[in-house]
Length: 187
Image (cartoon, rainbow, N blue to C red; front, side, top):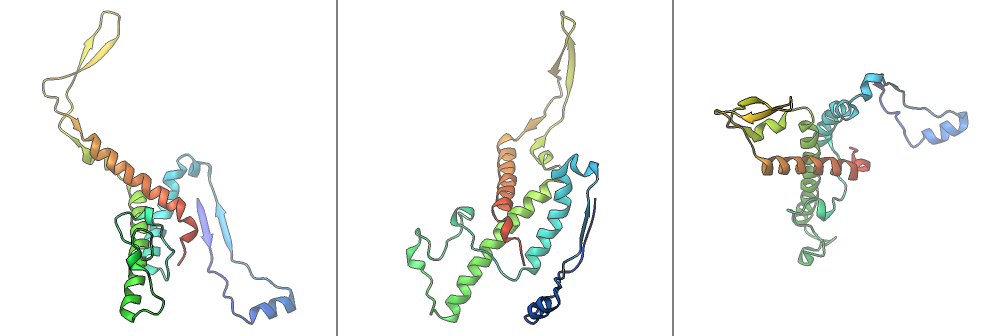
């Protein structure tokens, strides 16, 4: 895969008049070349691109979208039906105004963190942290010509299925949030 995206075109208010006068409309230069192997495991290929972009967006963001209450169930929300006493007052003090905007930033940061977590998990062996013990297997020959694998005397291998399911659920939530807030991935 080769991607070459040039800087966005600088646009000022007077450009509209000049562009209309001369019939010129500048465009951003974009060149993308996709090789067949890029789509063999497209989810993995895209994760290499998406992850650093999400990390940079979190650091350089200049604004944030409104995050739905159900996407941050552990955080209160000004003006939500579940918290009527926390209605936002447009003529509030500077302190209340700062608190209000800080809360929206915290909510967006949480959503970005969940997306980053999901895409980081794509390229590490996160399942291994839920395995413990040693695998000791013995092969037993059966009368019908088949073989059977049995646990050996030193077999102590265990999997924490509850922990694994919770981790997988968090990854899935990060991907869900990525899809839900895709149009909000701007700075």
